[in-house]
Image (tube, rainbow, N blue to C red; front, side):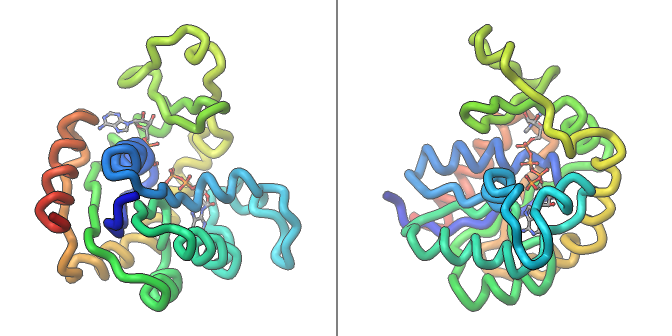
Length: 207
Ligand code: ADP
Ligand code: ADP
């Protein structure tokens, strides 16, 4: 397993999941994603209610629960790509206490593109892989037929998620701009072009 410790930042729909999957494969890293972890435990009863209630409304799940998920996942990983966390400043502080980062990738994408990407996103329920009705459909017909739309990718929830991003997560990105491993990536490019930039940035900072 690789030992690179990579954080990937960006708005909902920026392409974090798509590129994290490639990073995990290329460098043999653990893909730590709070969104997937929460979806797997969406009906878990906690003192704050279930994750589902927050996710369906497009709101952030309480920090306590998310912090615990991340701490556990990172403690068993050597190298990792962290995707979907931290999403507010209190999560930033928590993360700083438990680990160091070699590379911080920021996928920058315009709001218009985000809305198109989220509206057309489809997920393979068996593998969790993300596809897009227009930009990226699987070749295998069986996979094509089983794709589903995430409940929170409906238009109204998308708008709320983008609002929550702007309010809570934009400041997180501002914070990491000063990190020595920070690199801004033009996320408007094709998935392959974005990947080339990412790979170059990671190799430069961790070779
Ligand atoms: P996207 O891929 O569109 O950015 P995610 O799958 O990362 O979406 O997140 C889906 C939902 O899961 C969020 O809208 C939020 O409710 C919850 N969630 C994911 N990560 C976090 C986090 N770090 N803190 C709080 N809530 C989170
Ligand atoms: P995030 O994890 O940041 O929410 P995803 O990786 O799930 O983003 O990507 C959101 C949607 O956009 C998916 O449907 C995905 O297939 C598509 N997508 C991802 N990267 C690109 C890209 N560079 N160009 C076009 N579509 C993309």
